[in-house]
Length: 257
Image (cartoon, rainbow, N blue to C red; front, side, top):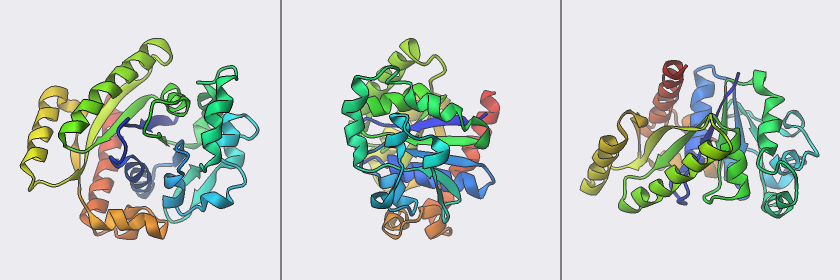
């Protein structure tokens, strides 16, 4: 059975897409069969995996409207070593179209069930809002990985996200839980970041991943070349941190079972 995780945070610009594509590439490097689902109409995870979103014949939009299966719509990220169900601007229209449909929050879950045995991990890149798209992701997932910067406003947004996850757990998906918080774009020279990091560990304990992703120029450059940072420069500190994080994810799952 595939383990399905949403990479989610209601705050924008916290590195959700960077986390998704680099974790996927890191998992592929250590031999895990991985599918990325791009649920963001901006299609950044698609482009960052080396797939031109403008050239997609079938996308996650077609899968949500049940006019195509994941097996038909997925593409291979040759450089990343994983499969991706891509997205483009069409997906913004799915928000409106889904409202009138039955099982509107369960569409992705149904589609993923058909490819369950083909993957070890499914990573869902969620948009930075609580929309029907995000809800489809949360209803499909076993858990949520929350990338966050160690800044004051990030703590504010985190409480909103935790409440959302509790509501989805109570009403729609009893399997859903927070798998862990990932500290990203971390700069140990900044005192405030160290303080927020300590607050997170004090409050959430072992829900905070041991791995810390440093602020890293090579990770930021990689998307413009259409490759995950893990592949773009495997020797960079950011790439090595994501491979370490992939290993930590596999170990954490083994302890959850």
